[in-house]
Length: 259
Ligand SMILES: C[S@@+](CC[C@H](N)C(=O)[O-])C[C@H]1O[C@@H](n2cnc3c(N)ncnc32)[C@H](O)[C@@H]1O
Ligand SMILES: [Mg+2]
Image (cartoon, rainbow, N blue to C red; front, side, top):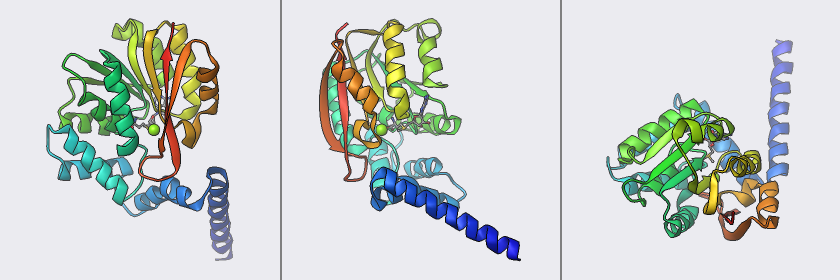
């Protein structure tokens, strides 16, 4: 009995310490709750993961073959029920604008998650345009396949499963890619810089390739920002906005490769 009391107290202490560390590190109980804890708590009391809950909501509330209804359903769920790391409706409008200005034939996305941003981009691109989107989490890739299929954009989007580094290295040989016109970077933030340098090294960027990076303020990618902003190889523009579904500061950085 005493052993279990000590064990429970120890565990409770550890959870409390983790919460305090998150709040201190990420600047506020509000963000910590929405971004890290709320979904976790919901999952504790549900047999479905957060990503399966997105899929369920889409299947129930969106219209098959109508990508805008899929985006609206996802945005509605995550504005009202729990938080998720899709680029979201507010920054999504910036993504739409920058993508349409670039008018790409080949798009590369790093970080598919459930396919929200891939659906968002696919709905704006003309027939014949290809989006290659990279995801290393099998469960997320599986949900993305189903959402892309439901939205009716599967013909424009190919989900490449694997780590970004591995997939980038295979693009030329395995996927017959020469250069990429538009890149949406939205995977783990410590990979923004090494993957960008790798794409440069492999010759995947051409003069005029547009790289749009999400979350450059929150969670933030300071090494990437410092690099592109100080490099003579890029022309940069910052688009201030807010973290998806919340009012914390965030933004997107456009870096146009000059060759
Ligand atoms: C922020 S989410 C992407 C959100 C998506 N772009 C959207 O707006 O709907 C990041 C995703 O990238 C994946 N990811 C993170 N690092 C990765 C890497 N190095 N290679 C491949 N996928 C990665 C994660 O598993 C996660 O699903
Ligand atoms: Mg993001």
